[in-house]
Structures are given as C-alpha cells and as structure tokens.
Image (cartoon, rainbow, N blue to C red; front, side, top):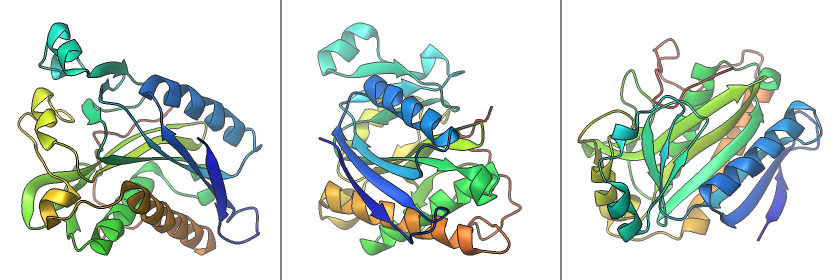
Length: 252
C-alpha cells in the first residue's frame, strides 16, 4: 500500500514528500526508485523520502564480489533469503523484517551539498532517531554507518547510496529487531566479522517499525529544510572535513 504526506513549508525548495511503500521485494523497489529518481531529475516531483521494508535479502553493490555472501545457493534457498545485485556502491549487506529502510530521492544539487556532507546529514538523522529510543549512536572514522556508543564494535545502521545527475537514491537501513546473526553469513560492507546490533538488543524493548520510520523521516526532513535555509550549506558531521569513505558512496 502506498501512502504519502507532505512535510515542510510551502516553498518549492523545502517541499518534501514522505511515501510509505510497505513491504516490497528489493528488485521491485529498485525499479520504483529509478522511476522516481528520473522524475526528480526532470523536476516533476519534489524531494521524496521513501519508507519501505524488504523480505529477507542479501544485496551486493555494483563491484561487490559474490564471495561476500558465504552461504551457497542451496542454503540460501533453504533459509528463504533472496540475493539481489544493486546499482549502489559498496559491498554486501542484508535487508529483512525487523529493519527500517528509508530511501531519500533528494536533489543534492538544489541543496548545495556534496556527497560527504549528505552522508553526514543522514548519519546525524540516524543518531537523532536512536536518541529518541535511548540509544547513543556514534560514527566510526573513515567509513559510513552508525555504531552504538555502549559497544563501539556493534553496528546498528548502514548507508548505501548512489548519486546520479545530482540526485541521490538508495539510502539507510536501521536495525530495529531483526536476528542480527544473519549478518554472519556475509562480509558486511567489506568488513569480515562485523558485529551488528539492533534497537531491541540495545534497550530490551522492541520498537514499532512504523513509528521508527516516521521519526527517521522527520529528522531527515528537518535537516533537509535546515540545509535549504542555511546560507552556507553544510552536512552534520562534527568534523566536516573528515573523509567519509562510505561503504555506500558512489556517484555518476
């Protein structure tokens, strides 16, 4: 089911639409993203934040080796996990129930943001969302994503982006209550043995995914509006000149 609402002021620059696509297979969601991306490039639609969830799926970035998935096809079929090749940058990651995914189809050209600042903005929104649930999130120097402050080795959110013709697509995934052991079956974002956690594991409380998604969309929309109104476009990193070699970052 597709639901949409508008967030922000009435000015064209600050107009942001939030769409909820429900649960959609990864390949089908990518096709819809590409259609929306083309319309955003053409100026037919405003910046759009897409909330979605996916059935259990391992995804591989454009240059990711098949060996990033350590299970064979027979075992993947037995576990009911699909595999999808994506056009984003980065290596392997997982999407599935118990995870909130948000794809911002946003014109960085209109925002006046570079890719590094855009990654920082999205990371900052993830940190703010985690704070709403009493979880302290932190960045890790030199790569993209968010880890929990109580356990610096536990990754709780990932980013996977592509920027084409000045418009960003793909986005962020925040783990709410999935079985994190599934990440043991891949080389997560190129890091073997990456420890992954969830909001539920960090707090002992399973949050409502719809509410988490709404909060995340709200934080991103607010930061986009702030970037539009700022005379000096900046992202939200504490050290804006720090290299953000995002497992996720790609551009064309």
